[in-house]
Length: 307
Image (cartoon, rainbow, N blue to C red; front, side, top):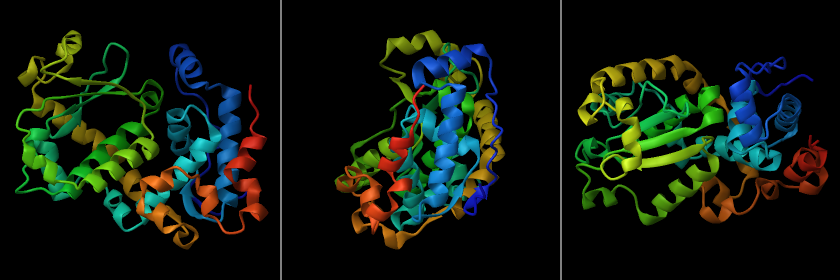
């Protein structure tokens, strides 16, 4: 099939790049097998090509797999998530999630301050740990857009790694320096929308969350933490390594800004990321849905072959 909407090539000869341990984990926790994965990738490419709401999309396996693995290969949910993901990046408010450049001056400074970064070593379960220091976010210097951008850059970079897609990630942080003034960063409506859309759309497996000063369970991983928090490697070294990872994915992430949907085919609520719109699948936003059911959620679900 010729993919006219492809922003990246459709690598239809994908091979699982890991050994037996990760293969078994992917099957047990995600329901991923070679047959199911190949079938799902083919379905998603055909769905994206036939879906008139989608104008341009990445067609490479890595892009689709991060959604498939995050949603445990539920094709209808994956389709809805991918479409909302692109829609979010093309709407006015969603443009906060475009130009995700780690070289942006505000983002670069937050990185240097250690606002958030992934620890270089994996934990005992092979998962990457994201370390947070929200107290360094100076409200006199940074705004909520800066916060959203750095989170987007860090999460997207980690989600690109296939091992992270399978194992998931762990969150850990310290709350030192956080005060009531931080509640002014977002209105209640904005905070709810961000949380709900993030939970629904960002393709990540969140496995654990720890507050370093209060949760004794994290003590078993103290050697992973920066030296300043009981580990061995200085935080500055960790941040330097993390910035190198971000640079490695930078061009791909910026290239994603070219993905697009036809905005006129969506409801105003869907374009705004309204919580109410998240309760309705996007198939209902399309005109003449009945005539085009073959590429919609229900059509794809009927074609799904279960092992």
